[in-house]
Length: 161
Image (cartoon, rainbow, N blue to C red; front, side):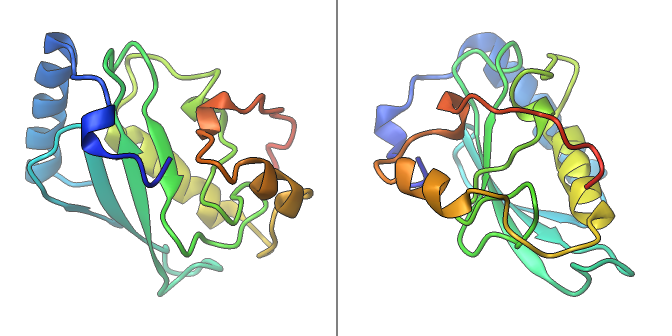
């Protein structure tokens, strides 16, 4: 879904718009360490640079997250993917899809884009190996036609990485 156009997305609800404006203002005052929001005029799609934490396998590396807000954010989780090239990590597929429970089943409206970013950086920082998830090629092939990671039935069974 990285190629989806802005016009094909649903308009944000008033609640979502107010919440995102508040999150954006808070981010600008006190951004989470290790992240840089690339500002644009689109509240529905945020592009965020992620900097690997010092002392980790990803130190001195930079990646980009694309965060697409659903119409009913924060009642519904945003879609979060890494733009190409995605980090090599046991829970990140080469197409940028991220296997992280808070992006799907464990999402709560109390979470923010900042808290999601911190969770993703924590996931990266705790990794002891740089490798793709088992079945990466098969999964990426199945997603070739723009399938959203939110359409995937994820199995969250590994909390070691």
